Every structure is written in C-alpha cells, then in structure tokens.
Image (cartoon, rainbow, N blue to C red; front, side, top):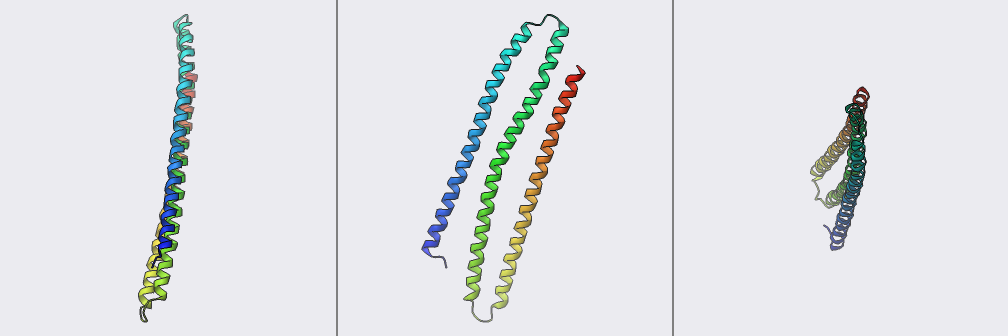
Length: 180
C-alpha cells in the first residue's frame, strides 16, 4: 500500500512537473511574440524602403525589374519565419515529450514496485497469477517503448520533409526571380 508520505511526494512531483511545463509553455509563447514583433518591425521598414523605391521608378521595365528583385527576398523571409516558428514549436513539443516520457517511466517503476510487493505478499499457490501479471506489465512496457520510438521516427521524418519543402520553395523562388 502507498503511505501518506509517498502520496504527498507524488503530488509534489506532479506539481513541480506541471509548473515546469507551464514555464516552458510561456517561454515558447514569449519567443513567438518576440519573433512576431521583430517580423513586424522588419516588414514596416522594408515597406517604407520599397515604397520609396517604387516612387523612384521611371519606366515599366524598371518597375518589372524592381518587382522581381523584391519577390525573392520576400519569399526567403517567409520561409525563414516559418522555419523559426517551426523550431520554437518543435522545441516546446520536445520539452513536453521529455516530461511525459519521464512521468511514464516513473509511473512504470512505481507500478512494478507495487506488483513486486504484491507478489511477495501473495498467498501460496498464486505464483502463476503473479507471473502472468508481471508478463502483462512487461508486454505493456515493451508496447509503450515501441510507440515512443515510432513517434520519434515520425517526428524526425516530418522535420526532414519540412526541411525539403523549405529548400524547394527557396530554390523555386530563386529560379523564378532569375527568369524575370
């Protein structure tokens, strides 16, 4: 059985984890706000500069050249912004994943301790039931580890795909800008 001290310790640990995750969530939001403020400032400055450049255009050919020269940096900045936003989100997700994994590991250890304790105090003749219980717990642990590995692989694949799409978008923008 769990003692009052064990329950209090578990509650304290859960509260510490909750506050730590809340802090990480606020840090992520803070980074996004900083990113958006910086992007807004940059966009405002570039808008003013681009407006001045447009006002100084003398003919249609110069206008087309200016337009083409403005499109490539705009696309590259959009890709950079998306990448930065993705990095913030994936970093926060990784923190939450680590915390969840640590909690699950701790819960598994505690549950195994309860099972072992129950096995020690089990009446004679219940060895088969205890062995089945331990086998079930081991199978559940193996299944959880397999799921965690699959999630990690899927995350890595998604990041690789994101990087590929980003590189292709920048490349396509550069190619389009050169053709003009």
